[in-house]
Amino acid sequence: MKQLLPYMRKYALYAILCPILMILEVFADIAVPYLMSRIVDVGIVNSDVDYVLKVGLIMILASLLGMLFGGLSSYAGARAGYGFAAEIRSKTFKKVQEFTFANLDEFSVSSLITRLTNDCNTIGQVTMMSLRMAVRAPFMMVFALIMSFTINPSLARVFMVSIPLTAILIILVLTKARPLFMKFQTRVDRVNAIIKENLAGIRVVKSFNRQEYEEKRFKKRNDALRDTALKAISTVIFVMPLLNLIIYGTIIAVLWFGGNQVVAGAMGRGELISFITYITQVMMSLMMISMFFMQLLRGIASKDRILEVWNTEPEIKEIERPISEPKDGSIEFKNVYFKYPASKEYTLKDINLKIDSGEVIGIIGSTGSSKSTLVQLIPRLYDATEGSVLVGGRNVKDYSLKGLRDSVAFVLQKNTLFSGTIRENMKWGNENATDEMIIEALKLAQAWEFVSKYEDGLDHIVEQGGSNFSGGQKQRLTIARALLKEPKIIILDDSTSAVDMTTDAKIQQAFKNLGDLTTIIIAQRISSIQHADRIIVMNEGQIESIGDHESLLKTSAIYREIYESQEKGVIRE
Image (cartoon, rainbow, N blue to C red; front, side, top):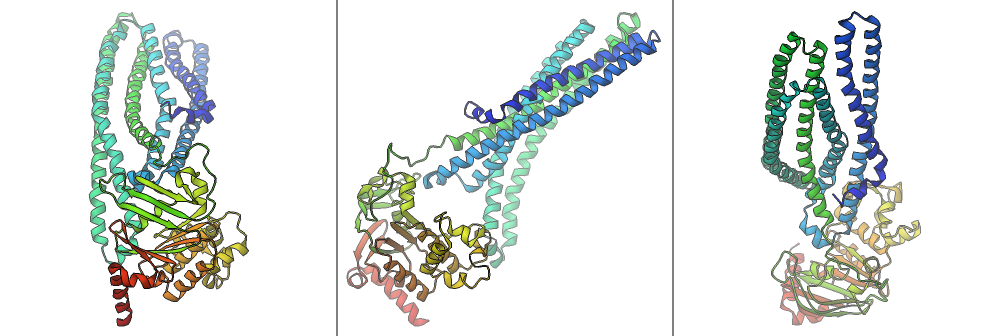
C-alpha cells in the first residue's frame, strides 16, 4: 500500500471528508433508537403529547441529517475511490509504455487489459468501501454496543456470545475465499485472451467457417470463469444465513430475557425496542465488516496484480548522461550473441557485420533464421546477450532511448494504423509535419497515388486497425509514416510483401535516392532486395553469406535455392 497511497494525494480532501461525514451519519443513526425509546417510555407512558412532538421532531431532524451526511459521504467516497483508481490506471498504463519487448513477452495483452480495467476498478471499489463501510461498520458497532450497555448492562452480555461466533465464522470464510478470488482474476484473463484473439481474427474464423469451434473454446473458458465465480459467491452466500441465524438468535434471547425484565418493571418497553434496534445495528455492522473483507480479498488480489506490473523493471535502461543521437547511420555488430529471456538456446550466434552509412542492405533467409531478431537489436528493442551493437560508431547503450529510436525508423511486419485520419497517422512520424512534408513522404512510399484519389485527401478516415485499406496500402502508409521521422536508419521488416513488384521496385528506387539514409530491407522475395548494395543471407541465427545478387548466386547455396524456386514460380505463372 505504500506504493499505492501517494496516488491518493490528489483526492486527499475527499478521502478525509468521507469518513468524517460517515461518522456523523453514524451519530445520527445511533440517536434515532434512543429518541424512539424516550417517546415510548416518557411521552406515551405520561400521555405527554408535547414531549412526543418535540422528541419526534428531533428524531426526524436526526434522520434527515443522517441522510444528508450519508449522501455527502457517498459522493466524497466515490470521488476518492474512483479518482484513486483512475490515477493507478494512469500509472499502470504509463508503466506498460516503458516496457521493452522482453517485458511484454512476460505479460499477455489480455492480462494487461484486465489489470488496467477490472483490477483498477476493483481497487476503486475497495477504496470507496474502505472510506465508508470500513468506517461506518466498526463505529456503528462500537456506539451501538455502548448504548446497549448504557440501557441494560446485564442484557448486553448476550453480545459476549454472538460477536465471537460471528468473528470466527467470518475468519473461516475469508480463509477459504481468498484463493478463489485470486483464481477468479486469472480466469478473467483467460476469457479476455480468447475474446481478443477471436475478434482480432474474426475474418479468418469466418473464412474457415470455424464459428462453432470458436464457440466451444469460448464456452470452455467462460464456464470455468462461471464455476470459479459461483464457488466464490457461494462462500459469501454461505455466510449470510449463518449470520442471520446468529442475529435472530440474539434477538430471541433479548426478547426472552428483556421481556421478563419489562414484566418485572426493571426495563422500559421503549428501552427494549431500542435495545433490539441496537442489536440489529451491531449484527448488521458485523455483516458489513464481513462483506467488506470479502471485497477486500478481491482488492488484495487486484493490488498484487497491479504491483506486479509496477515492480517489473524494464530490461533496457539508459546510462547516466546518454548521448542524444547518432552522428550517422553506420551500424556494426561485434561478436553478437542473443537469446530471449525465457530461452536457454541462442537465437543469434557470433554475428559480426559492418554497414556503412547510406548503404542499402537486403536480408533474406528461411523462416526462423532470426532475420527480424537481428535488426531489432539496432534500436534496442532487445539488448544483445553478448557482444555489442554500434550505431554511428558508438554502442547503442550509450544513447538515450528516445534519441536512438528517433534516428531509427522501424516498419514492422504487422502494419498498424490507428483510428483517425491519414494526416493524424502520418504525424506519428513527425507531429510537426506540414501537409507538404506528408505528401512528399507519401509519394516516396508510392502511397500518394491512391491517397490523392480520395475526395477528402489527408482527412480521409482511417478505421480501427486500418481495416478500410488493403494490405499493400497499409504497408505503403506505414513506410511513409516512418520516412517522416527523417531517420538516419530505416528498417523494413518484410514491409512490402503485400505490394506488387512494380510498386516495390519504385519504393526501392526511392530509397536509393535518399542519400545518407541507411536502409535495411528484410524480404522473402529476392526481387525486393536484388538491387541492394549488399545482401545478407541468414541461416539458423548465423550469417551464412554476404555479397551482391550476382556473387551470391555463385557462392551461396541457400540464396541460389531461394532464387531458383522463385524464378520457377514466376515461369509457371
